[in-house]
Length: 78
Image 1 (cartoon, rainbow, N blue to C red):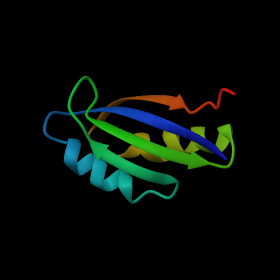
Image 2: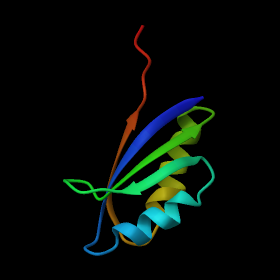
Image 3: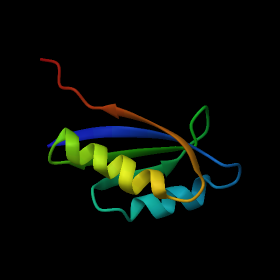
């Protein structure tokens, strides 16, 4: 299982709507609107890096109101 945080910038006034829509996407475990340089932070999981990429590019980036995303895969350093 591959997990990642997706940091999202939205159009002004769209953060809450974007977070609500993304929260309904399969593979998204949480989506919250926040303050700071990003407007929404999403935690997502997929079976592989390729599946994660498809989730982000084909599904998340298709949500209306998103202007930019930054995907940060979770690593487990032991």
